[in-house]
Image (cartoon, rainbow, N blue to C red; front, side, top):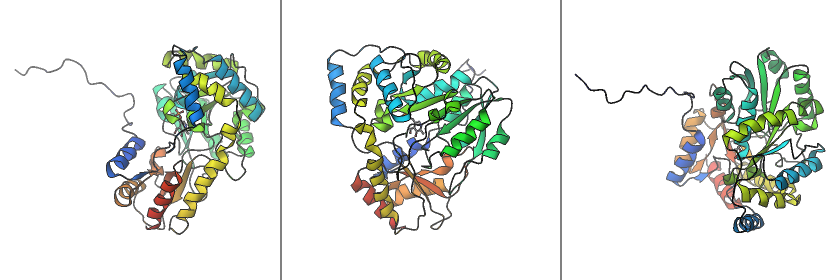
Length: 388
Ligand SMILES: Cc1ncc(COP(=O)(O)O)c(C=O)c1O
């Protein structure tokens, strides 16, 4: 008689299709092979020493216990003031601004606040990888609208055809990761026409709100009054101030939405790291700290693209974000995933295949580079890529 080694049942995965993310895979491979890592989206340079000194000041002065659940009042006030100055939209810091542990937490909490089992959620793909697990963990059903290169333009007729009585939420992202596209005023109007008189909420992921190029202006969904009243606008200080490792973000939403959002946030993390919130409250008061970003990143985008100019990659310059997508169709017909592995190992440049951002892993022979890196790194990477 065999003796059972365990009496428990196998744990059925709630996310059976989720494995190790490509970002982990590529960053690990880049480290192992010594490749230049243009895969994961994080700056290759440090944040401002002034910001570090501010955090140090608050650390040393005893600001080390739990922050209020909704965020430190000074930071909520500074953020509300900045938002009003930038977009002319007033959010009440007391009831409509919530500080979170990164945009990722804010996205999850907003989705959880709205989505019930069986609800449908419109996802415009390619899409950032946290959206679909957040929907599915809350019992929602992702309904995909597929955008394709070279323009990744949104077909609003198609979006409208996907809306049913079960549609509860639409997730949008501008400036967009991974494509670098940004929303137009027409998009805001089209979306408003679609959701009018319907019980549909919106999560707008605007973590790259300060990174737009060639004179473009960020069109936050909050600037359209009909959208503002039904939207959770999500931001990330990590992206804006080169501190992705601090995992600090926020959600701006009308009171009724924020109330429900906070009920979830309260039991996800309760509150967010205290000394950093105080430091950011001070740092936000100087608009130059974020107004300098378009020039800063446009120079890097242009430096990288100038380096690719003599190559066989084809591209449209990114309109925003710190990502550049390129087509390699003129070089090889290899699957994009295999190519990114080969480029990492053989020429020493790590990138991300765009197929991973599609639910069916659509392969359009496109890969993504992150250009938030030091100039010498970008020059060297482009030189290697030119050799292909
Ligand atoms: C589009 C998008 N949304 C959200 C996030 C996550 O932001 P955070 O690090 O603040 O959670 C990222 C990070 O790469 C992103 O690119």
